[in-house]
Image 1 (tube, helix red, strand yellow):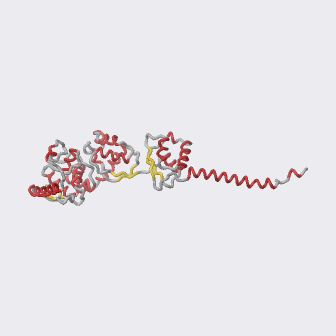
Image 2 (cartoon, rainbow, N blue to C red; image 1 turned 120 degrees about the vertical axis):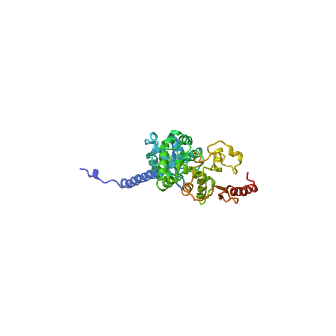
Image 3 (cartoon, rainbow, N blue to C red; image 1 turned 45 degrees about the vertical axis):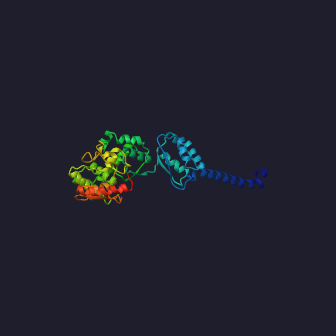
Length: 352
């Protein structure tokens, strides 16, 4: 047999083998580098956590538009590839999704595909009207302001939670709550009711019962007190004065309720002509508490009512030094002197 058929590859053939091996390794490294560039490098171009808000009306195209505002072009291309080869377009989940500086396209894609939201902290604002409450909540939640206002003024919805339209805002305790951005209206209201019940459970409810006041009455009085002063230390004194008036069936004559009745919260002085308005919130004309709160009160205001100062004062007037505190009086004649000093101070500053 001819042995030449069993000869080893020539030196030239042997020298090509490492070349092919190195070329293959080089191609693999290049492919891996390209994959890493598009899929494993940070998606966000920001050095801080950004948030992607996807609502019920979003499409794949609108999601891309929102992502483009925070993402790098090459990583966005990776996202498009991942989405194109998945069922995401048929199952877009709404929510608030965190895009952290170190997150790559794969991480963000998994997050939005699986609906892994980042909750937010919602603080109930101390606003004066339901319209304002709806507007402020809609800035933080996916809920529309008109939808919120409609629910809070709907008698059937209010009664479901034990309130009337005039007292519905009593259910909102001004704390901070962790919620999902796309929470439904029903779940949001259920949560507020749960938090309200927890807030009143125990000492607060016991004190209200001892005073013979309903929760809504405590909150309504607290809302007036909060409008009278921002000085928390003085609030129990003001609460005691108004409670003295209530016990004697005297009109509260609270200026903040006149502003609410007119919906003119910018007023600096309350003239006699403003006291003629025929409104249940006119506490100069009607004795007792108004139908509901004139704002969402602070917790300090609520606790001031529940822990009011016992005294015999029936009148108060803002101090002439504009410190935000008040002079108190037990008699009307003494009150007139306090009022005259304050009026002169207003005139001297040209406050109308």
